Image (cartoon, rainbow, N blue to C red):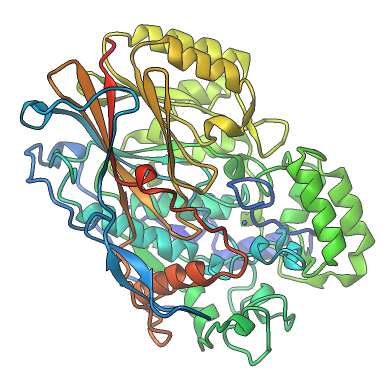
Length: 570
């Protein structure tokens, strides 16, 4: 593990070579480069600081209080939601009116006596699509912005700050906002990182488990990304370049690029958490099967910064159709533009991870935090080469985490026959109590095995919910006997997570309560505030104002804060 992410409680014996030694070892290894924000997945086709004070590890799970608090909207979107000020141009944010809870009776009627008879069964938090991003990585697809403004996000340099602020928000919650029940665990439903990169994965794991993060690769002394390239295609926060974003009113923020690369300290979640894999965690750019020339280029010294609109759109169409999963067309494109590439500092921490390496990082004791070791991944599953597993979610409630990524490439979902057989056995084995299933891809984004998966979940009467992400949009869909809850991302506006509570209503029905939460960052961003909290506020504001951003990702009222009724079938 590099010095970019150091859990405060990790012993010196676990630390590896320092950054400059690693950079020297990398040499000038490199070849043609590409780029790689969020090309196909997730619904969007991706200065030195003083030493930080030690961070104590989060309390062990046994130290958590089991006493229920009074239900409270505090810290959730029931209380308030970030809302724009003004009607045009670059808009600042402030506190807006909260979203009311909507009762949905698509699957069962809401009995009048359920409130006083209700018994909490499980209470947890879902984070999804945080897209922790190394913005200086040579293999990114920022150049697709020429013709598609939404293909690059001006907020991407602040993804770590946004996640740390979300962790702070979750830690501040006193319990379930509907029941007051203690939070049992948290789960991340994939696209935890942006580009299948070791550095990004280390930053994500440290943010979740607690410790110091330096979100910086390449030359430790300077920024080497698109935001000081002089190209008007990208927002230059410290330069008078009349770029695309400044034409939309984006501010000048002196010192931002150095501040974004400085060390930040995460408190880590103070409850157990589990990790589900997404296509961006497993595939280059969320689509291409990593390895070979892609792996060599990722740690190399050449980077393409711009491309014609026609070429970028052609690449986008190929990926959206599920093509070129081995990246041969991409390789030829980069060869064609080899002379237009710029030199960057190579860095071995940008190397892609194999399935085994991804699981092994989760199993590293440095990232255990409040547990469990591996965050769902085990030595047994590692040896079997699988990233799916089951776990005890609460007394009598089972969680099942699936791997819906396509191992050979493709941003769309894939569930193998072997995994379906395993899932059938697990659902049968846990047939006496409710089961909550987690995956990255939502139902309509799984092109291989999707129909079989849905039929399997509907056939087993103990499945109560299928929790997922990928689309970056809030949507709640009833199926035969259970609810599919799809949650918006924490990289694109409106940058949400969810608290989900399961209750037995004592009348033959269950309720799932879903409550959206934002990060702890102040709504009003101050361009002069380059503290971690100030940068997290700016992260939210930039996402709201990003040219070409998706609209309607917050969903309808019935997709946000809800009570979802369903019959108790087992």
